Length: 412
Image (tube, rainbow, N blue to C red; front, side):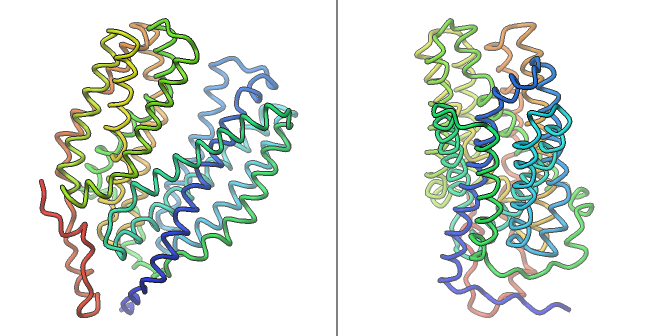
């Protein structure tokens, strides 16, 4: 029988919190670095939109593969080692892209799959660490970690734009970021909390795939992921094509959406601490529904921007808080986060193409209304994220150890 894991000191929790912020911010920065260079890669390879979609789908497939593998890997080796290794894998993928995009499509496909695999594994591991910091710190911080990811994407996008403006070659840009990532991240995550290996049963994702609550949480997260991905991909297109707005206004619409989502994620712990997970997420799903409806109504551009604002506020906490709920039991957290992340990523895979197909038939601004039924499902399913009381964890904890505050919530 394994010995109980030692309770981290407050200094260790603070150090882990800082390291987790770094991991999330860096992940966002690296992802934005790649997407800032997609147009140049497309032009270099002479790809049409459908061919580019297929190439990018390979990267998404790599991410899903990384998500599926990460559960048992994190359970056995811990988030610190997993993030460190995945940073090396992701760096190798970026170097492959940097060296191969002038050669042809095949090196790009290989590099994207490796990049996606590293990204998916990194994603599960850092969310696992974020959930562990929540549990030991007694505060719901995962939404703030996701806000730092958004900050990283903004920084990566700005740096990408700057490198293009100064005519830094794509190969040099990607290679530099890949090398820095592989060199710095394994060192920066040394502050993660010590890992206690899970039992063999807990390390097996197949058990989590058979759990009703885990699957329902996955569907709950999927609804928010679909709404978030649709906003990212199609708000600017709908503003320009259907509202006849200028490209600058289209970009402003996306900026409003992302800023609202980032600020709401930062405020999330305060709201959850006061009102509870279920009440806050149910209300936010309704807010997002209202925003999508206002955006799709085609009333005026200012009202569409207001709709984008409500849409961003409403979808902000679904993904991070859903993962927090999946990680309530530390013994099964790795497997459950892996399962829920895999389900949610199906939305990122299918969402853009579904909205594109519908948009071809009925216009994009009307197609985004497809988000509404899924958000209605999220409202109905919100009860599944109610914090679990884990008796086994209480039995393992030393006498006098306080329970995390967010596990005491009784709001509904």
